[in-house]
Image (cartoon, rainbow, N blue to C red; front, top):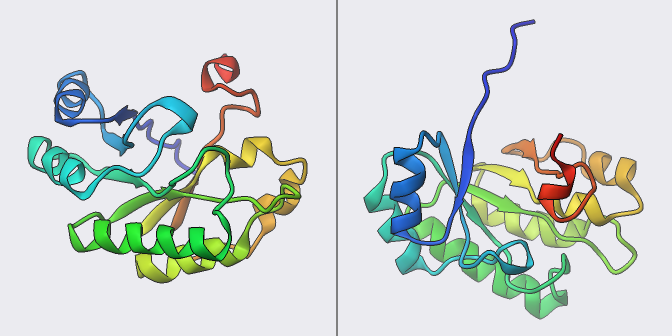
Amino acid sequence: MPEPTPLLEVIAVDAADARAAFTGGADRLEIVSEMQHAGFAPTVDTFEEIRAAVPIPLRVMIRRREGFSAGGVQGIAELVHTAEALRRAGADEFVLGWLDPDGTVDTEAVRAGLGTLNGAKWAFHKAIDTTNHRDAAYDAGGRPPGLDTGMTSGRLPPARGGRA
């Protein structure tokens, strides 16, 4: 089995961040609206500005509230609306993942989000680091369409606590 090729993914909140990351050698960007609370979904305008600024893949965060809850029925509808708007704007890679109050994967929210992505590539957000049901979270739903990455900081929030 061949060795995996390292990939440098950098978070960007605006076009200036994106250009700096690209110039510094980033292979892919994760687009968020802010750095607090592990990032929220960017606006469509911000996504479009960043897309115009750099020629590398962009992973767009689909998250609207602090913590890892989707926010119930209303929250799921808002997440789907956000994902649809970003998809229409040309986003084709995403970061998402929500937990139920008991710390298990919110499969209803994940399924709703995936229904909007239509097979696009996506990463399960580091919500996985906060669950007490880690093995079950990894197994939830098998291997959903498009899932190619699980983001983790080694279960040590914030991410800088998990670095070697």
